[in-house]
Image (cartoon, rainbow, N blue to C red; front, side, top):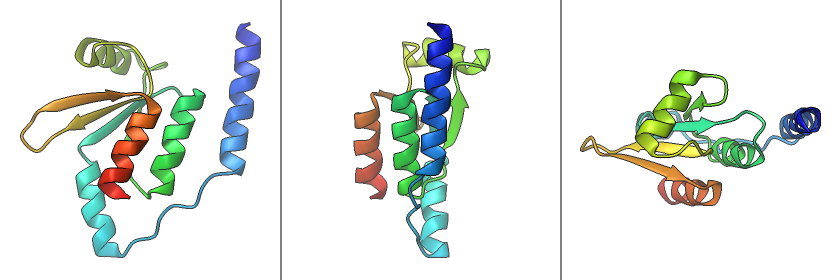
Length: 120
């Protein structure tokens, strides 16, 4: 089972690389503003998780620079996700609001809908 999962993961990553969406093009000033707003966002993910790939593709399509955190291979990120987010589920978007409040958003469709409403 583990070898099948590994093979499928490699296929998913290959197809993602071959069919990567083109990022949205913005003016330099507009992109700088978007980058400043996305600095407060962190995406906890696994590299070959299909739902994480779906979320990363949306991030690329929207032209966003969001830090990704590998919760599978980095025990510090995995622990932070579980202790602060409440569960070890990916993808998960950590949103730090201007007032310092932190929100943990799970589910790829919810994350994509949120990003499209903010940056679409």
